[in-house]
Length: 196
Image 1 (cartoon, helix red, strand yellow):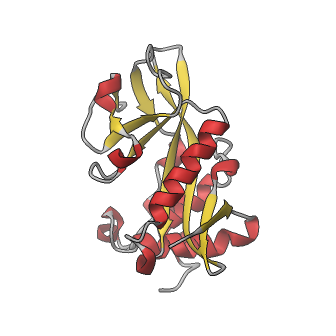
Image 2 (spheres, helix red, strand yellow):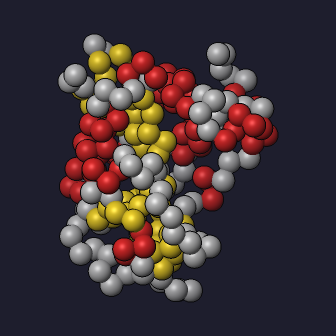
Image 3 (tube, helix red, strand yellow):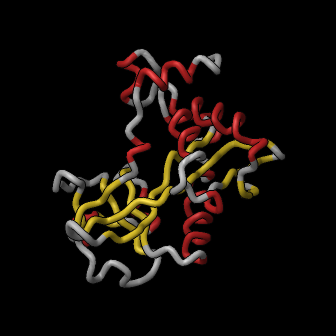
């Protein structure tokens, strides 16, 4: 299928939050806390965050209907107690369930990383499925001597250089903005804006 990809508009926000909710509902850890997911709430918060990169907020359309979304946020590698290197992270990346596994997510990843490269960003670091993201050039973060804030590495923690050699002399710990630490009670309250 051929998808039309464009920047998300403010008028799309609610529709994309519904899409994100449907994409993740009852698939993640939140269901044990009395809510099917919190990714739509995270998306809502990220749009108001100063490190949200609105130029890399894309929706995918099929027959003029929005079926997918990807967003990027600035994050950083802390090299020591003073120096930090800015990088990107993406997510949530959402595709309506009936269109999953049909290439929409892949097109969003490829299109958005090309746009991020044109904007001059040097690397993307994610927590993602280790059997899915290597096809886009993601590698285990340990290959770059980058760890989590706790000093750990695992297969889902991956890095993609957008500029060849960008991380050559950079090592340290990867940090997401505090906004990613969702308060479950706030997510439950926010979820009341939606019906299932």
